[in-house]
Length: 595
Image (tube, rainbow, N blue to C red; front, side, top):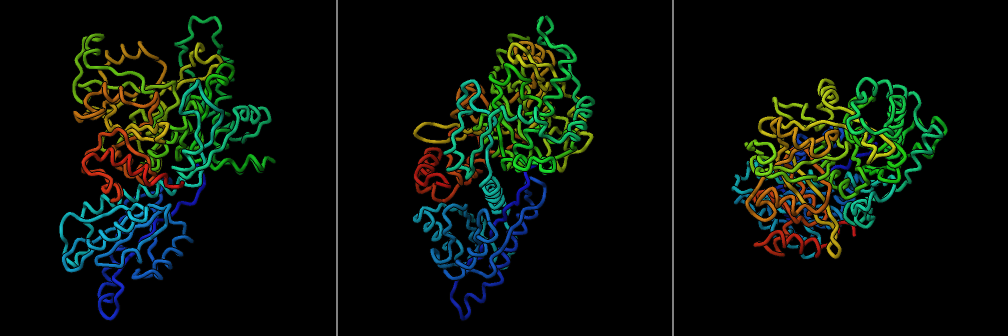
């Protein structure tokens, strides 16, 4: 896992600056609001390593520009990733506001009748809009008593949603996306656009040729002791499965060649990790430059075809980079895109930073209607899948945590690594086969992970996302909440034989709304913007919408209920009837967060 220092969030208690009675009467209430918000965040949110997030509070309440500047100085030194201002009363808007242009901002104005916190909220949000520094407005639905120190549920939901998105923004900032190789098979997403990463995500781009892996293998630039341990572990836990693709091919690899390929795939995995994170052990071996790594929070591997026509494919490496356990034990996952699809990698990164859970990288492969299933199998679909589903599958590069073997309250989940048990990790491995690659596609061999995502009787809640680049517009984000579903055995057998029986499969039933791109499952497939999708556990589309608005990435397709959509107040100044169009206008008007 990349060793980084996680940023805190800043809490700003703003106050009516008038002395001789007014300010003094509000000091405790205002500072208590700040403390309660800090406690809420630190109790409910975690960083990707499982530790509680940090919130810091201004040293004093902020009644004017001098105290605002003092607060900013403190927050700048601490490297905060965003700010939340809180107040129960009227304050002087543009004098107390945080004017940092490249940070997310939110303001909670207490809904009480004794003091006009809502009036300040409206005034300071207007100032933010006028100055071109969008801010989120938080205002409780119901009036509270002046001495009520609780945070209403609706306010908590917005505070947590904003904070999650803000931490995601801060964590990815100044990290890199590492391209190992270049463009895979002409895929648009693997044409890495540095302007997108720099302007919208605050990230830099790093590049190495795939030959760097060969150099490190040939010159033995890896931890030799770890390799021995990894190979012994792999032989126990990832045994080579049946050669279902190449049985009749006279050029198929023999057992000795497959064992050499497994050794090579392990070295690829170790080297990819070292390229992203760095490795102090390499410095001890005399490779100090290589020991530094590329400070990469996400990466992608080109593979096809220049690599895979000669060397083992990247599926084994990509699977374990995206998974939460290997020969080193249980650990945080990496974000690693196959075919160097950087846009899917970026989508996986956003998902990961919002959920702290590993991601599925998959082809959005086939739409199956209920009618088509009945025609080929004689079986009528029922339950969550009754309206049809999308078959999500690739050559075996997705996280092993998606087998459905991880459980909470008896239901299939994908856990963050600090909640994962050894038994669950082993169960994931036992439910995965390692199929020798189809040498028609992968002439250099390699292995594909092969499993089915088991969703259980009710389906496992998942969210599929994708960032696409549109010429003249920039990035746009698609979101589809739904369920990973189980299929009757006879239906699965027919589908599996018609596609790739040695690849992993996730069967995804999106939630339909009867509108737009979600009128039917076919419409979801028909409107999806690329051949890949990033799939994460849970329904977190509302969090993605909030994060996208911070980054100024418009959302062109989603099935999130309207009441859960939370964007800066400035968006309503650009339209309230068609909020999708307003989102596009706002993102274009205010421009990328870091531009």
